[in-house]
Image 1 (spheres, one colour):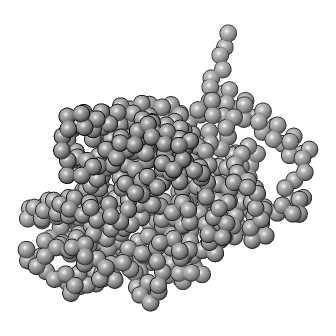
Image 2 (image 1 turned 45 degrees about the vertical axis):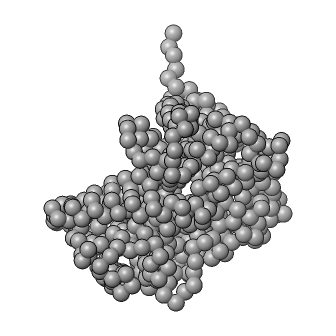
Image 3 (image 1 turned 180 degrees about the vertical axis):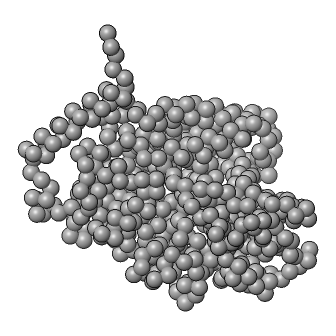
Length: 512
């Protein structure tokens, strides 16, 4: 007896689903016929898949192109999921400020359910009391101003070690893989701030590799999220990979927790409690101290929150630094102007201190321009509406997914002019645009209730590392490479990094 292959079964199922969908649409009143429920405009989609087939390898660019035709509030259908794409500052303000209470939630997805212990962490957690409690815990014990100041010696030491490594490379006239050393720096900071120690064994290498793959799978367009009936077939094989990753990650996280528990049993002294210690001290307690009926913190909560913090710290900061450094490296005028500012304010006899950063106005302009052209999360993290709402004359149904295309907003010709594709920090010279989520022309960290809580720590690391790289060194591209032709292609995921690493040779320029 002949057995059908999984692909043949999937094709038959798709045909049956398509037939059912066409019959349903034929005997149901169309959305356009309900004049009080006018959806935002959008392109015509296909049965079943909607517009999934149109997204391509770089969805933020595809959606930006479509928005030029259909407008800054556009409606598409990703499988069975109604999706609203927001592509202008005014539209973003409507969703993230005016109606923030309606759009502050997150859609359910397969990736966090499988890999994040049933979404017990913060970033992808639906809006509600549990999310508020986890956010407060992370801010108070890791991301607050006092904690950022407490970790200053760690930052100074790790960045100093990197500068010494680059100084030795300069003495040998070596070409450096800048992308790699930036990731290693952020890894070292991460291990010391969150895990309380430096990298010291094979588990640490595996942790980085697993986190990279987890972030990649979380950012992938998973058919199972948009066509739930097909989820059991796992057509892309993503669920299988997620389960394998989850098991591997769980082993590493358990090892980290057991290591800390053993240190506590042995009463080993530490300079300060790290984040793992804090989480373990809260085990078996209510998430909210004022509410004894709130969820109790268990071991899976600890592991999920740790994974959330590790993934955020590893992926976002290194990617942002890499993009901005690439643009500086590509443009000698900007490099020279930034070095002149550093020379005038810091001098050539010492490295940059954190107290210098508030005086470096051109550095801030360079960083803003980097965020404008290269937002780390070009579609932010998806939002979801918790109720029906009419917004700007358009009906947005409950459970709609909302994608805020900050990549498109950063290239809006009406906002940024005809040179919107050019890296030009001077555009911020006489403009008071900030990046704290209050000015919707530039919201790389999001806005409203779901704004990134690690923004201040991330910005401090970014400013300090860029300042040191440019102040301590001149940079020369490898032989045969031309600055103007430096590859700036993107690689899509939950975060969008460079497709290829940056290589350059440092030339030491300080007198110390």
